[in-house]
Length: 417
Image 1 (cartoon, rainbow, N blue to C red):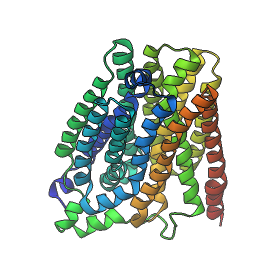
Image 2 (image 1 turned 90 degrees about the vertical axis):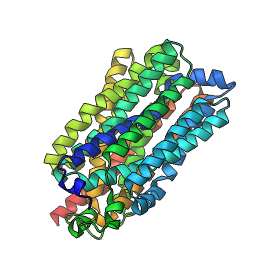
Image 3 (image 1 turned 120 degrees about the vertical axis):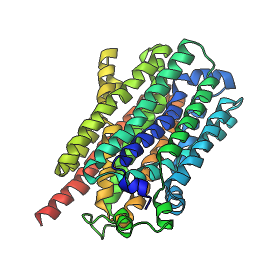
């Protein structure tokens, strides 16, 4: 194994910083367009809400489709050799969208962005899982995930202020994003050293190799498609569905159905991301020290996410809406994510961790393909997106029920037996 990695006790911290910045770039792209849909629609001609919803759906379709293949790429070439070319392609995708004159060109750029960033999840979390101390893994995952919250704030507020408030052309947002992506690509080049594949090719230390693929505390006979695992996949599907519906359509919903000014929706929507960071860090720090409370915490967060999304719809005034969004950020997807990731990693043997994580993310992210387009379609057909919020709430409630019945009760019976 590369000596720099082996003898540098702070290397895992450098990885966490680099991977956190990677999520910043990805989430700036994911959210920078949503507050300025009206400007894009006006610029490209007669573009419907359904067509705009497809921009996010095309991206997430490509992103989701890359989940399982990306695991094979990382296994063959290593994390660094996958991440760097992918982020260069990501920057090109942002430029393609920024130069768009038709909605079809936007779709092409979105597909390229989805393909290029689709390799990030497996590469990032396999890299952090390998080098992060066991008693810090959930907390490290939360720090890495906090990059998505920071990127969401920058994307939502930046485009809302610059385009909605200062009347800057929407295309410039994509050019700025491309510059940020390239800057973070160079951070990867500087911070990330030789990864697993490179180390193995150079005759890495046998003990380190064995530790990288073996989790002695995990069960060895768990199927990746057992009832318990399928329920966990559905839990992530429901969690992601509500989150990506909100990320994609909340700004538009606030303007058209709650009476907010367009220049303010970026700030309001960013409340979700701002509240998410302390929530995720607090819960994961607790779970790293109290692993036996992991399942009850997941159940609580699912119920809380369902309640706060429904409260967003029923909020009678802006104050209640602000409270609902802050609570969703505090208790929603970004709080659930790192706990679920660690749970999935610990629930299977070491040689199945990478496959379990890519399947987990595949099922979760498949909802991100459905939610944006379906929400746009519901808005076009009914004239309101309220039904979409109801669907997200029902999915989370069903996920909580199945998680309790299939995962928690079965574990109690196993422990009792």
